[in-house]
Image (cartoon, rainbow, N blue to C red; front, side, top):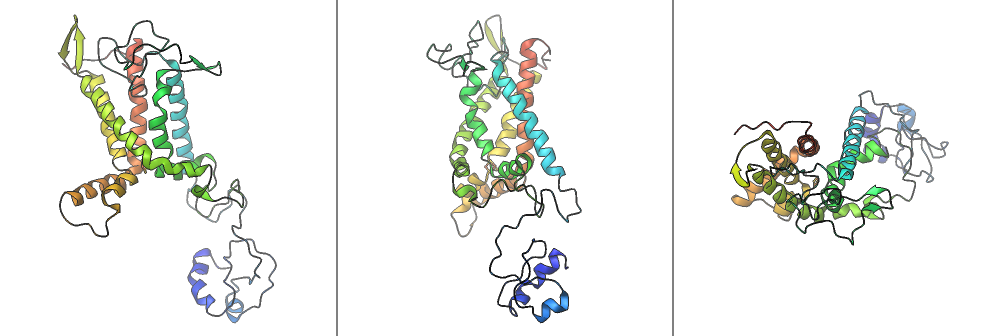
Length: 327
Ligand code: FES
């Protein structure tokens, strides 16, 4: 039997001599029922099947002739995304230590604070609409604490969840269907699978709208970064630079590199044009393309830094870490 690449190479040639398309050799075929041709006899390559060949023809789960370490990327994605989901859910459920009194440090997982958490005794100074209102429940289903984080995390979470890069990564890593190119799949999708053209995955197409919300969040987090250079001493505001200021400043930069490398933004700038001229639009398109080429890298860096920024604020707020002041 020929390896896959050889079969692929011969396919158009074969088609000129047979009235049925060739079957790829890795597929599990029904017994040969078609007419053999001299090419089949010469190469012993293909089984001629009748019209009863149905695709996809699945291999057993994990079976492949690939010799590279194809499983490393899905495994790392599973571990990395899994760790972030566990940490961010835990952090969102806390409802405390999301700001540092005496500074303007605010965790990005709680920003913007619509209402202060019902778990804190004193106002944080960050809430847009004041204290937790009585009409908002404090728990979901009587178990999961509802905190200010859950009121806003749907937006950046939805943006990441529907990101084109993350989709490809977590489809492979979390439900392994597909798990990787030319590797056997579990077949969860079944024969009725229509991808992102039908429910429920059609909701992935909301990504283009999440992009606009994500841009607003970049603005809000940039404001938080600027305010992190303002400290409160004896009731007065004064300029200063703490390690936390730097941590909070790096955060919107990383998020900006991720967000503005989005495929949606690239399409918004140049996707409707047949040709890209010179000038500002071309420069903007090149800039977005440059970020877009490293979209995966920025996706991971920004994800890590959001988690680390929350962790840093949480540690300083709880008194476990001291925020070293440079100025
Ligand atoms: S494609 Fe990844 S953020 Fe839009």
